[in-house]
Image (cartoon, rainbow, N blue to C red; front, side, top):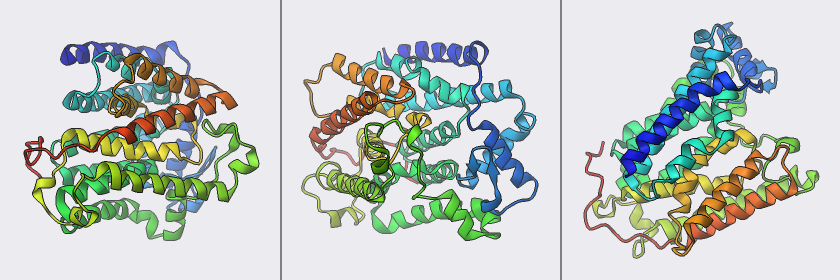
Length: 395
């Protein structure tokens, strides 16, 4: 049943992806700015402080520059918008293929949910095909990395994960979960080479810019303190603007984010009977199941979304494809299927309300709280009887 529905939804998605560029108009938001920024690099400017577009300075890591430089040349210096849309339609199909493979392997959600994942969100279609944001590119690489983790190819997966981070640093929201999984799978000492690989990839990609202005590169590409504009926020519209911009509010969110992550590590991700110190050892009997691997990564990202300083409309793609998995992984068994679908619908409505309102923002937080509560009530999984239900060789 899963396989048949996958084929059906794939066909529908292919049709939608190819029809959208023809039936809907392109909306210019960031594409021209992307092209201006990479054009500056092509013209010989390697100081990140000097690289700018219509919407402001370049604020993405070096991987973004290389990928969108390729798109710059492919699309006639960014002028061939129709071709750009078809390229992003291909990205969309690749992303769905990778997501469907994760869902098919875990078998955590009923088959009809695949329809929601591929067909029910106009906002997601728009982010990919009509707006040409860089967020979908980063998430496509991220889902590729998760597939590699499920195949037991951890080293290659870490490399692809680092490439995803180099396109947009929102992928770092998955980092706490990934670090926990690496420690569980390999122990501390065998995890260090994989972390080193991630760091080396970032340095190699950023080398041309680091040689010119290292401080400028890191301050622009990995600016964790960047201030967001209140008019674009999806999740905090009900707050006064001065509170939204307050550094104390930002610190409170950061503290809540870290606290929630620590609680999930200690009480939900860590198996009962194991101490934190035992995770740092290399003990093969503690290998994670495929289901637990996906759940930890998706939950790590979702916690970050819950406590984000601001969510803009294109950020929806950061967690859209993970929401059904999280909802059907919750510990509230009596949460009806219809209620789960209703929560997905309310979240979709919140992201499609433009401009955002007090009610759309509040409803988004209520839905987030329900999902987070269900994940907290999810019991700690029992230790598998085999080393892992992933039979692939670890690399």
